[in-house]
Length: 110
Image 1 (cartoon, helix red, strand yellow):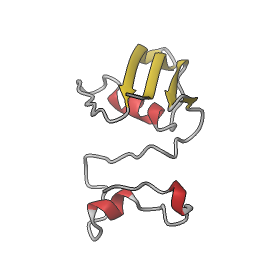
Image 2 (cartoon, one colour):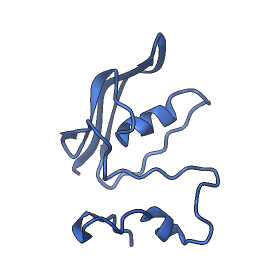
Image 3 (cartoon, one colour):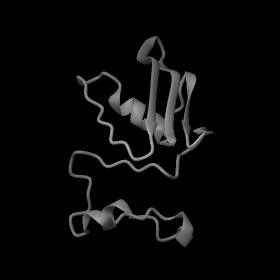
């Protein structure tokens, strides 16, 4: 399998608060991964770093071998609560905002 996401010695601090401490994880292409934990355990922070919305304080996160230093255009965030546009299908919600992208840049889901 091909390494898709690699989280290497990743720490995220907000001031003195450590949200994620020295995390390591490798996700292979085609794998399904679930983040499970108590409220405040860093799940959302980790997802925000993978998507490039936050940067690690220490360590690195790579996607297909490239370090994520800005918003990751290959990542999508789907919230659990009602942030979907109810008049659109799931596929339309997932691809919302991609109409301006070139055809080869779009997310394709089958």
